[in-house]
Figure 1 (cartoon, rainbow, N blue to C red):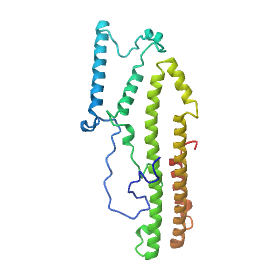
Figure 2: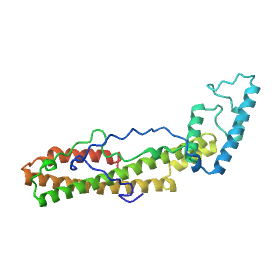
Figure 3: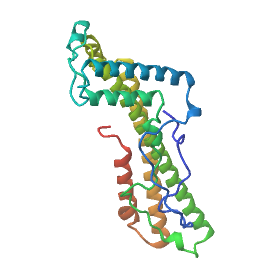
Figure 4: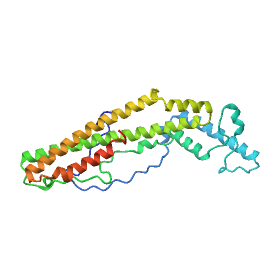
Length: 270
């Protein structure tokens, strides 16, 4: 897993000092898109084109053999393949298309979905962290410095937590795609299916060991980040109490913020 701040981007939270309003960024198009031609490996493109041409040729032969009665919405009888170890006697069109999409993403003929996951520093429903210090021109230099230091610590915790969260989601998408590809292959053959089931159920298999290690690293990193955040919020509460006499700032603002962040950045069941 990357270091705690490897994916961190410059960002501010609701407690940050006022800044010039910026227009909201355009929403991201989450649909896979073609990789730019200059970024492709020419050999991969040639191999893919050969496969496409071959499939087109088979499709044309199938169409001619059926007297132009081929229905792509109906399952095809592939029962003759059973004698070779294939266990399904029909073709799952939707499943096949999903497999093709996963293959195209794996070989980056279209951009993998994880590339579109970016840090979100103001997710929907995130509580605000108000402070009168934001507009208090009478703050002493010492108090202003203390306020800014607390801001920086809260922002640092946010970048840490969100950065790790994005890495988690990207990795889970990639892992899910690879597992779907393996599952598609396993569904074709009884022997392959049994082997894949054994791998999935074996906690000592290298794949499962690596997955468990990744999740453990994520959990430790997020636990550390949440502790760092909570300490900063408590100290912000002490600042508000000392400077403005607000003894309940942490209870009303800091704690709800912490609870929200804990729910967002802790894996279910961790």
